Length: 160
Image (cartoon, rainbow, N blue to C red; front, side, top):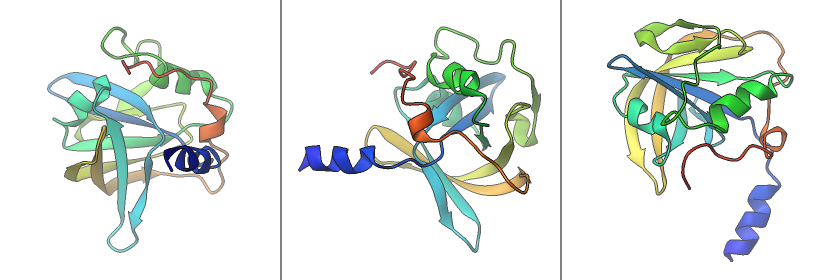
C-alpha cells in the first residue's frame, strides 16, 4: 500500500515555495513542497515545515511567515533555501531581501509572495502545519513558478 501511495504522489507537480520567518533577531527560510490554500472565506493557507528543518525552530517562534513563489529561471534560489541547512549557513547572505510585515524577509527575486499571520500550528507527523491568514500580498497577473518536478534534483539541506 505504501509503495502505491509513493507512486501516486510522484505524479504530482504542484508549486514549491520558499517560506521565510523571523523571530528574536533570527532569520530562516526553507523550500516547502507541502502547502496550499485551505479556505476561501476567510482566506487561509497552510504550509507544512519539517521538524528537522532549521526554519521550523524560527517559525515556531514567529507571529507571521512569508510564502514566496519562485520564478522558473531562479532554480539557484530554490537550491539555496532547499539544499542548505540554516544550522550551518546564512541562507540570506548575498540574497536581496527586505523586511516585510512582522519583520519576515521578503525575497526580491520572488515573483509573488504573501505574508500570513500564524493563526494555528498543528503537528501532523514529521511536519508541522502553520495556518496562515494573509495580511499582505504581492502577485502579478501571470506567473510561471517553480514546481515540484523542477526541484527534484535538490537534496534536502536539513538532516534526514
